[in-house]
Image (cartoon, rainbow, N blue to C red; front, side, top):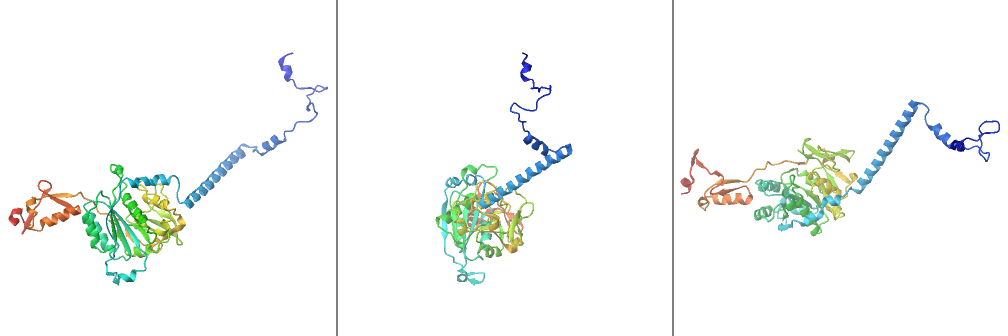
Length: 399
């Protein structure tokens, strides 16, 4: 028998195909009929059906992403923040305590006896600095601002391998309670194209606070080349978690700071977002030390441009914690002024003239100690002394 006969449909006695199985029951295809009945009949309706499916999928994705972002914000961090902070790097360059004074020798502050300010909380003003020609002038100018601020401890952390005695003498002269640290940048970053300046200094200051178990007061990072309104200090002194405020002269917008609606921070205005959750300037926030004590691993990364962002993540900050200052961030109380840096210069001046016959010896010693310039027998531009509009050789005056 041909093989095709094996697959010949059964026929009834009258020659027609049977619609029944051997059991006499008609097979059911109702499930398939229902599915086919849901599928649109026309081409246009099928296209519309596909579009609706795509839109529904996108809507589900957007909602799910929003839920994940809210969860991230509530945690205050995402990804491997700990890896970015890399706390082990802090041990590469040991910090040296160069000088310290807890005594406030100022008799009057803002025309009031110092004792009248005793009940205020302390502001720990951290200034990272580094050796350069403008270092001493910048610190001097800043000191004369801080002289008007009561209940302040000034932590000056210098990016240098050794203590600078001149800086210690300078800081002690103002009578402000201070701590002077030598906290050099880790060696591995010295040849980096973009150096994480100030990070080792701020980390050293935070470590000093932990070592002294200081858990009250307010922490503020204040660079030595910024300009500060005295109102800023009274604004930040009552910070409960993290206070924020605008900083002037930042990048393309000329401003960086929070956007406030009905007394709440809802976002940030900054010309360089770059994926930062907290796109703020280092001078644009203050932190309660009692709140920071709840986050013992708080730190700052050696990642240029992201120092503020990851520090604020490390203390678990969320948007609803931020306290806007400066009349709901409508006032600019700190300016990111920057002094143009110049290389240290040398003056060609024979050392035989740097004795006590004139002031030149003491003057150039001070300039050398400050890192501004120095005298040399063979290098630099030749020193010129003039009188009545005419230059004379040094021997004419000092013979």
